[in-house]
Length: 156
Image (cartoon, rainbow, N blue to C red):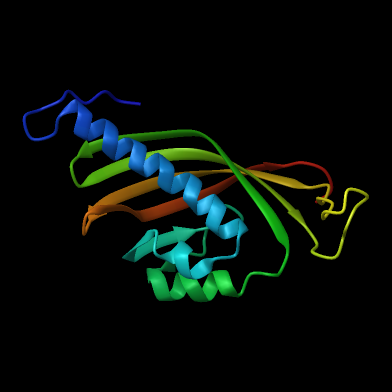
């Protein structure tokens, strides 16, 4: 991650706050997609944002409306998106870039195990996101999220 020296226009404290807000955005994405709260999820994105899933790297989804339609069309399953190694660099008061790793587990909603909760499928998907963030209307938003699949565990 490159180091950006503080300037009079963008103090270290402001830069740190911007980076932390973007890190929180990455984790909020995981929480909302797992909760299937797609209306709230698309509000994390800029109106003209671009997104692609790690599992569909060539399918670029543009704009909140297409994002909402795409997420609502997802199969109904229980998911757990676990993000790690989240790194964000704010290069101005209005722009930041980032990178994160993702492990995703899924389970059929009716595949209830002995603990009374869905049993995860044998396969876990491991991927990354390269992110671009913008500050607009007083908050940080995803401008672009580019997913890339690295590997999968278990049955494929």
